Amino acid sequence: AQTVTQSQPEMSVQEAETVTLSCTYDTSESDYYLFWYKQPPSRQMILVIRQEAYKQQNATENRFSVNFQKAAKSFSLKISDSQLGDAAMYFCASPIQGAQKLVFGQGTRLTINP
Amino acid sequence: DTAVSQTPKYLVTQMGNDKSIKCEQNLGHDTMYWYKQDSKKFLKIMFSYNNKELIINETVPNRFSPKSPDKAHLNLHINSLELGDSAVYFCASSPRWVTEAFFGQGTRLTVV
Image 1 (cartoon, rainbow over the protein chains, first blue to last red):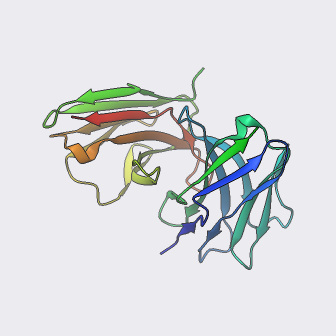
Image 2: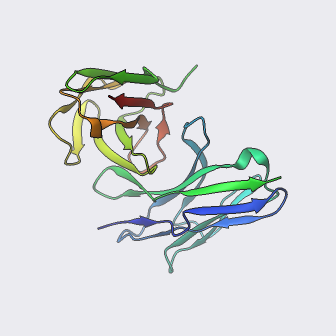
Image 3: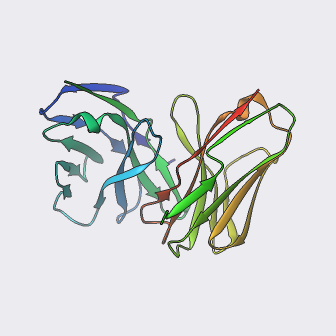
């Protein structure tokens, strides 16, 4: 079965510092997308960044970037210059080919210390 | 304009009741989903529809019945509510299943 695993239930970081959230996935597909979503206390699911597997270049969105290691099936999210508003649950997600569904990791709760 | 909207945001009801959650998307997407988020924040897909056709039914009790009157709407009806149904239910849509999903704001269902 295709799975997405986030091994860090909780992480904390000092404001303005950098933090990396880990994600590993398992897929038999050669071309696929990977996503990071943010869920603040408002509970809205917000897309943070996406990566297309066929692209070698790591995706970047302002302070958010990914380290995509296709061979290792690893997809980590780096948040630079952490801000208080970054405090949230972060979910890694991957679609499952042929099953038409997006599978989510267990989530990582990120706390920003002022 | 809200892209994916679901109503109500909060729903408190007694065991045994029947309730519905409505979802509408104005993005022109073909695919819509219902996800359930439990108390541990785990997100699990319940149903997936593509152009009004049911694609996925993930071993959900048959007390849960989705209905898609058109491709912009996907409603969820729940019969005979149980305490274990308490959760946050998210509606989402995507242009194709391989792309990212856009989520509604969620409905927190509390069964007492």
